[in-house]
Image (cartoon, rainbow, N blue to C red; front, side, top):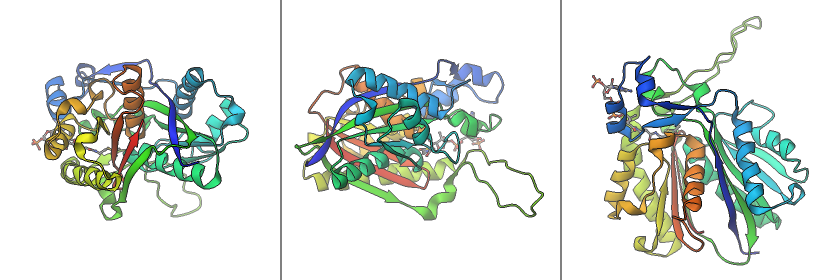
Length: 322
Ligand code: ACO
């Protein structure tokens, strides 16, 4: 076994759509501001489904597409920053729902880089154990972490899940990767802070909502993402022009345009779906990949640069042959 390959991709989003105009009806914002600054027009917001339910819905579709039996799955990783619980992990819940009794399952927390981190970790685990099959999922219900009175964050995020089935391969597929963490910048993007109790009778289990220094994160990302892609491309020993598609985390259309410009690559190589889903953190790259495969934009053998960035702060780029 030399590497892992992508066997199938899928995604699931909540039915309920919330438009920019709907947000503007209860918040001091406008469709014009949101569209111009971010490219977002709508987002899907969960009413009943939690993160594990969206993840499982994506996995069921994956099963329909690739016909695996639950017993065959060796590993399940859910990348998420909005798990149902602290424990059990969302991955353990998916394992139970699927009946994948042979699978080791755990969550991975790296915010919007989570899906790329999880692909890298799943690959290493399959390779080192000579395991055959892994399901990697990016799933989020970010709406439960948002302060819906804070226009600076509320307009940006959405809910959803995407999944891939990875299988052992005798061919090289992952050509290069660049993972980095900038813990010193962690306070630029925070959510879900819980504080220790002052006394034992205190019953305050509240979590903090999303807070982000948008301008700082924007500066960080437009500088670091092109550098990360260049490092990964160098490791892959290919030219930038050999990349067929750049799948960037869907945080902001302006960021994607800026990265395309810095890399001197045509925007047509940067598929986007931010208008429909907003920023779905760890689910974003997984949903984009699955949509591109479903629409025949990405075909078997295409060379892809997938780059995630976000809380941590974290960056992760993977170059792989689909
Ligand atoms: N509607 C109307 N006005 C608004 C809104 C809103 N929703 N939000 C902010 N404003 C106002 C601000 O109050 C400010 O007004 P002022 O000039 O009077 O003070 C003005 O608009 C400009 O605000 P900025 O924050 O400077 O706007 P900016 O152009 O930077 O856009 C944004 C904000 C979209 C957040 C951008 O900074 C960005 O995309 N940052 C990076 C986000 C990112 O990549 N995150 C990483 C992934 S997320 C994760 O890991 C979970």
